[in-house]
Length: 261
Ligand SMILES: [Zn+2]
Image (tube, rainbow, N blue to C red; front, top):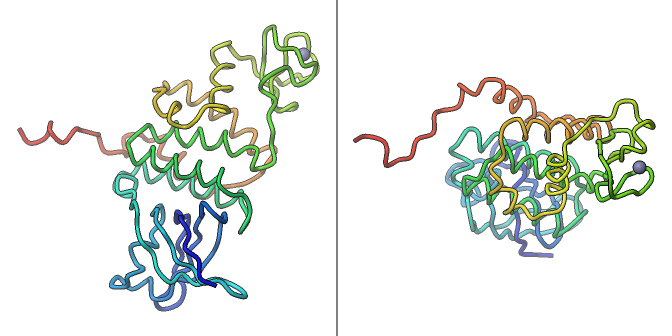
Protein backbone atom coordinates (compact mmCIF):
# COMPACT_ATOMS: atom_id res chain seq x y z
CA UNK A 1 0.00 0.00 0.00
CA UNK A 2 1.30 3.45 -0.94
CA UNK A 3 0.50 6.47 1.24
CA UNK A 4 1.47 10.11 1.19
CA UNK A 5 2.07 11.48 4.68
CA UNK A 6 2.90 14.92 6.01
CA UNK A 7 5.83 14.35 8.33
CA UNK A 8 8.99 15.45 10.10
CA UNK A 9 12.20 13.41 10.22
CA UNK A 10 13.06 12.58 13.84
CA UNK A 11 16.03 10.37 13.17
CA UNK A 12 18.05 9.17 10.21
CA UNK A 13 20.52 6.31 10.59
CA UNK A 14 22.92 4.97 7.97
CA UNK A 15 22.20 1.38 7.03
CA UNK A 16 24.56 -0.68 4.92
CA UNK A 17 26.46 0.75 1.98
CA UNK A 18 23.97 3.26 0.73
CA UNK A 19 20.70 3.15 2.68
CA UNK A 20 19.22 5.00 5.62
CA UNK A 21 16.64 3.94 8.15
CA UNK A 22 14.48 6.96 8.93
CA UNK A 23 12.06 7.57 11.76
CA UNK A 24 9.45 10.14 10.92
CA UNK A 25 6.53 11.56 12.79
CA UNK A 26 3.49 12.02 10.58
CA UNK A 27 0.45 14.18 11.13
CA UNK A 28 -1.93 11.47 9.94
CA UNK A 29 -0.57 8.25 11.40
CA UNK A 30 1.93 9.06 14.16
CA UNK A 31 5.46 7.76 14.22
CA UNK A 32 6.80 5.35 11.65
CA UNK A 33 10.07 3.83 10.55
CA UNK A 34 11.03 3.24 6.94
CA UNK A 35 13.94 2.18 4.78
CA UNK A 36 15.19 4.85 2.40
CA UNK A 37 17.14 2.99 -0.27
CA UNK A 38 20.12 4.83 -1.67
CA UNK A 39 19.53 7.84 0.61
CA UNK A 40 23.11 7.75 1.95
CA UNK A 41 24.46 8.65 -1.47
CA UNK A 42 24.73 12.44 -1.80
CA UNK A 43 23.34 12.33 -5.33
CA UNK A 44 20.22 10.45 -4.25
CA UNK A 45 16.94 12.35 -4.54
CA UNK A 46 16.23 11.05 -1.02
CA UNK A 47 19.45 12.44 0.52
CA UNK A 48 18.16 15.90 1.46
CA UNK A 49 14.61 15.00 2.44
CA UNK A 50 15.82 12.32 4.89
CA UNK A 51 17.89 14.71 7.01
CA UNK A 52 16.79 15.14 10.62
CA UNK A 53 14.29 18.01 11.23
CA UNK A 54 13.15 18.13 7.57
CA UNK A 55 9.45 18.78 7.21
CA UNK A 56 7.76 17.54 4.05
CA UNK A 57 5.46 15.14 2.27
CA UNK A 58 6.64 11.55 2.21
CA UNK A 59 5.48 8.73 -0.01
CA UNK A 60 5.69 5.48 1.95
CA UNK A 61 5.10 1.94 0.80
CA UNK A 62 3.99 -0.26 3.65
CA UNK A 63 3.65 -3.99 3.78
CA UNK A 64 4.73 -6.64 6.19
CA UNK A 65 7.67 -5.41 8.27
CA UNK A 66 9.37 -2.09 7.74
CA UNK A 67 7.97 0.27 5.14
CA UNK A 68 9.93 1.83 2.31
CA UNK A 69 10.31 5.52 1.72
CA UNK A 70 9.77 5.95 -2.00
CA UNK A 71 9.78 9.73 -2.39
CA UNK A 72 10.00 12.91 -0.40
CA UNK A 73 8.99 16.45 -1.18
CA UNK A 74 10.42 19.03 1.24
CA UNK A 75 8.19 21.80 2.58
CA UNK A 76 10.78 23.26 4.98
CA UNK A 77 14.36 22.08 5.54
CA UNK A 78 14.53 24.05 8.84
CA UNK A 79 17.67 25.78 7.67
CA UNK A 80 18.30 27.91 10.76
CA UNK A 81 18.10 24.83 13.01
CA UNK A 82 20.70 23.13 10.85
CA UNK A 83 23.08 26.11 10.80
CA UNK A 84 22.97 27.31 14.41
CA UNK A 85 24.69 25.18 17.06
CA UNK A 86 22.38 26.17 19.90
CA UNK A 87 19.25 25.69 17.78
CA UNK A 88 20.54 22.28 16.63
CA UNK A 89 21.23 21.21 20.21
CA UNK A 90 17.75 22.09 21.51
CA UNK A 91 15.97 20.76 18.42
CA UNK A 92 17.92 17.49 18.78
CA UNK A 93 16.77 17.26 22.35
CA UNK A 94 13.14 17.78 21.29
CA UNK A 95 13.16 15.14 18.55
CA UNK A 96 14.92 12.63 20.80
CA UNK A 97 12.44 13.24 23.62
CA UNK A 98 9.46 12.77 21.29
CA UNK A 99 11.04 9.70 19.71
CA UNK A 100 11.66 8.09 23.09
CA UNK A 101 8.21 8.82 24.49
CA UNK A 102 6.17 7.56 21.54
CA UNK A 103 5.61 4.17 19.91
CA UNK A 104 5.35 3.47 16.18
CA UNK A 105 1.82 4.16 14.90
CA UNK A 106 0.87 5.51 18.32
CA UNK A 107 -0.41 8.99 19.24
CA UNK A 108 -1.33 11.34 16.47
CA UNK A 109 -2.08 14.90 15.56
CA UNK A 110 -1.41 16.40 19.01
CA UNK A 111 2.19 15.25 19.19
CA UNK A 112 2.75 16.10 15.53
CA UNK A 113 1.35 19.59 16.12
CA UNK A 114 3.62 20.12 19.11
CA UNK A 115 6.67 18.86 17.23
CA UNK A 116 5.91 21.02 14.21
CA UNK A 117 5.17 24.15 16.25
CA UNK A 118 8.35 23.70 18.32
CA UNK A 119 10.71 23.19 15.39
CA UNK A 120 9.03 25.97 13.44
CA UNK A 121 9.44 28.37 16.40
CA UNK A 122 13.14 27.48 16.81
CA UNK A 123 13.64 27.86 13.07
CA UNK A 124 12.03 31.31 13.34
CA UNK A 125 14.69 32.08 15.98
CA UNK A 126 12.55 32.12 19.08
CA UNK A 127 14.50 31.23 22.26
CA UNK A 128 15.27 27.51 21.69
CA UNK A 129 15.80 26.88 25.40
CA UNK A 130 12.28 28.13 26.24
CA UNK A 131 10.78 26.14 23.37
CA UNK A 132 12.49 22.90 24.47
CA UNK A 133 11.33 23.51 28.02
CA UNK A 134 7.80 24.00 26.79
CA UNK A 135 7.92 20.69 24.90
CA UNK A 136 9.13 18.92 28.05
CA UNK A 137 6.11 20.20 29.99
CA UNK A 138 3.66 19.44 27.17
CA UNK A 139 4.97 15.88 26.71
CA UNK A 140 4.38 14.90 30.35
CA UNK A 141 0.88 13.47 29.67
CA UNK A 142 2.25 11.51 26.69
CA UNK A 143 4.80 10.05 29.12
CA UNK A 144 1.91 9.07 31.40
CA UNK A 145 2.37 11.87 33.94
CA UNK A 146 -0.61 14.12 34.65
CA UNK A 147 0.43 16.87 37.06
CA UNK A 148 -2.30 18.48 39.15
CA UNK A 149 -1.90 22.19 38.50
CA UNK A 150 -5.41 23.64 38.73
CA UNK A 151 -5.92 22.93 42.44
CA UNK A 152 -4.27 21.41 45.52
CA UNK A 153 -3.40 17.82 44.63
CA UNK A 154 -4.37 16.66 48.12
CA UNK A 155 -7.49 18.60 49.20
CA UNK A 156 -8.67 20.27 46.00
CA UNK A 157 -8.43 23.81 47.37
CA UNK A 158 -7.90 26.52 44.79
CA UNK A 159 -7.00 29.32 47.17
CA UNK A 160 -4.10 29.84 49.52
CA UNK A 161 -0.36 29.64 49.31
CA UNK A 162 1.01 26.89 47.08
CA UNK A 163 4.12 24.76 46.81
CA UNK A 164 5.19 22.16 44.26
CA UNK A 165 5.27 18.55 45.40
CA UNK A 166 7.19 15.87 43.47
CA UNK A 167 5.53 13.27 45.63
CA UNK A 168 2.02 14.38 44.53
CA UNK A 169 3.23 15.63 41.12
CA UNK A 170 1.43 18.91 41.43
CA UNK A 171 0.61 21.81 43.70
CA UNK A 172 -0.09 21.51 47.41
CA UNK A 173 -1.86 24.27 49.34
CA UNK A 174 -0.47 25.56 52.66
CA UNK A 175 -3.03 23.47 54.57
CA UNK A 176 -1.45 20.32 53.12
CA UNK A 177 2.24 21.27 53.27
CA UNK A 178 2.88 18.69 55.99
CA UNK A 179 2.15 15.68 53.77
CA UNK A 180 5.32 16.19 51.75
CA UNK A 181 8.53 17.09 53.63
CA UNK A 182 10.39 17.71 50.35
CA UNK A 183 8.05 20.17 48.70
CA UNK A 184 9.43 23.14 46.78
CA UNK A 185 8.14 26.56 47.85
CA UNK A 186 7.08 28.70 44.90
CA UNK A 187 6.02 32.29 44.38
CA UNK A 188 2.63 33.18 42.83
CA UNK A 189 4.54 34.22 39.68
CA UNK A 190 6.19 30.81 39.43
CA UNK A 191 2.83 29.13 39.94
CA UNK A 192 1.33 31.12 37.07
CA UNK A 193 4.31 30.29 34.90
CA UNK A 194 3.97 26.55 35.48
CA UNK A 195 0.28 26.75 34.59
CA UNK A 196 1.10 28.82 31.51
CA UNK A 197 3.62 26.28 30.26
CA UNK A 198 1.12 23.53 30.68
CA UNK A 199 -1.85 25.23 29.06
CA UNK A 200 -1.03 27.93 26.52
CA UNK A 201 -0.06 27.37 22.87
CA UNK A 202 3.60 27.47 21.95
CA UNK A 203 3.51 30.82 20.10
CA UNK A 204 2.73 32.55 23.38
CA UNK A 205 5.54 30.82 25.25
CA UNK A 206 7.93 31.66 22.41
CA UNK A 207 7.26 35.34 22.85
CA UNK A 208 7.42 35.33 26.67
CA UNK A 209 11.12 36.32 26.78
CA UNK A 210 12.02 34.35 29.91
CA UNK A 211 14.98 35.23 32.11
CA UNK A 212 17.69 32.64 32.71
CA UNK A 213 16.84 31.97 36.40
CA UNK A 214 13.18 31.49 35.44
CA UNK A 215 14.10 28.94 32.81
CA UNK A 216 16.42 27.20 35.25
CA UNK A 217 13.65 26.95 37.82
CA UNK A 218 11.16 25.57 35.27
CA UNK A 219 13.75 23.12 33.97
CA UNK A 220 14.66 21.86 37.43
CA UNK A 221 11.05 21.00 38.17
CA UNK A 222 10.21 19.30 34.88
CA UNK A 223 13.50 17.36 34.71
CA UNK A 224 13.08 16.10 38.25
CA UNK A 225 9.65 14.79 37.23
CA UNK A 226 11.15 13.06 34.18
CA UNK A 227 13.99 11.57 36.25
CA UNK A 228 11.71 10.30 39.00
CA UNK A 229 8.59 9.32 37.06
CA UNK A 230 9.58 8.57 33.50
CA UNK A 231 13.23 7.54 33.73
CA UNK A 232 14.31 8.35 30.18
CA UNK A 233 17.95 9.26 29.67
CA UNK A 234 18.53 11.25 26.53
CA UNK A 235 21.86 11.35 24.73
CA UNK A 236 21.27 14.89 23.54
CA UNK A 237 20.77 16.10 27.12
CA UNK A 238 24.40 15.76 28.17
CA UNK A 239 25.51 17.82 25.18
CA UNK A 240 22.92 20.42 26.05
CA UNK A 241 24.03 20.50 29.69
CA UNK A 242 27.62 20.93 28.56
CA UNK A 243 26.59 23.75 26.26
CA UNK A 244 24.71 25.47 29.08
CA UNK A 245 27.71 25.22 31.40
CA UNK A 246 30.03 26.75 28.80
CA UNK A 247 28.09 29.44 26.94
CA UNK A 248 31.38 30.81 25.55
CA UNK A 249 31.35 27.83 23.15
CA UNK A 250 28.47 29.46 21.33
CA UNK A 251 29.35 31.94 18.65
CA UNK A 252 28.37 35.52 19.51
CA UNK A 253 25.23 36.31 17.61
CA UNK A 254 25.35 39.41 15.45
CA UNK A 255 22.84 40.80 13.07
CA UNK A 256 24.14 40.49 9.48
CA UNK A 257 23.76 44.24 8.82
CA UNK A 258 26.10 44.99 11.71
CA UNK A 259 28.95 43.13 10.10
CA UNK A 260 31.55 44.44 7.71
CA UNK A 261 30.97 48.20 7.87
ZN1 LIG B 1 -4.59 21.27 50.20
